[in-house]
Image (cartoon, rainbow, N blue to C red):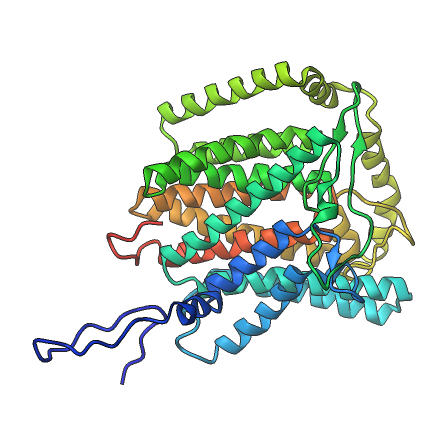
Length: 458
């Protein structure tokens, strides 16, 4: 007997003219099956990561103990177990597996090298934390790449990611408008705040404050919206099946875009520019003009509602003696002697901790000093694998919607690669898990872009 892929339907065999009535379907059982499917599990991770504040953890655990992060780590185990069952994950060639393997082996080699060097307790603890965060990222990447078998399942995950990102954006807007951190009220029973919420940070004149929504850092907040939420909104505002859904998504996209400048971050502004340039490759000139006009109108509204906001953002790019920029460049002279001591495998994965050394606001440089040239090469391979698969879909897919979604995912990866130059991105679990989701989604799209049924819309 030939097994069928999960979720597929066998053709009806010839039989009597009147088939027996199997009885009413059990909706509760159907919901359980959806929730326990790869798409349902990944969507649950997204809900936990974006809706719950980043500082909310399981009591007794460290910052890696966020419910969403723990579930993402378990998904790596789920993927490993699913590999032995022919119906749970897709078989055949999948370049994302090789990209993930290259990155994991690079981290593991550096981790072992650090242990052999001898670590302090704080270095050892952070090294273990970094490996667990990597496991969470790789878990969602592999399960998405191999577990999402149709455009419908991929669409469920991408829509969940979009709407949860909209929720995070609205939280940030309310924080800015009310000057009150409403994440203090988002604490489900049984969970606890591992540390005080991010709160607000003053920046610029006019009493402006930076907000971070439900995530762990202002740069992380603006980058996630600019690289993921807005591009996905632009995709589904065009390709969603129902007209009402397209209109709702368009409105939600504009609202989310309005949250980007509230982080008062150069990174977010550059990230949205990168996203629009890369995604714009898939647009016609009419759509480019419409989105350009909408962007100008949004900035005009901001100049009326909050006159000092755009001026502050402009000053961030034009300032000659910005402490945040000089602080980053001053770190180079301090860190390169440490890199030269152990250039290949670094000091050990995750061992460059601010408590012992200094804060390094550059993930690429942080990876170089911690995991060496091998670690940076592994990270480059991971980004390149995702971008390469997305470009392959753009070149070969027959559907316009596939090509556009590929451009959206590549835009997100490109923005993430840039933002990693501006803060220690892989320390923040919302960024880490979302990075894994983008990688997994582009791997899944690469696989299914030519195999969907003609009527399958996502």
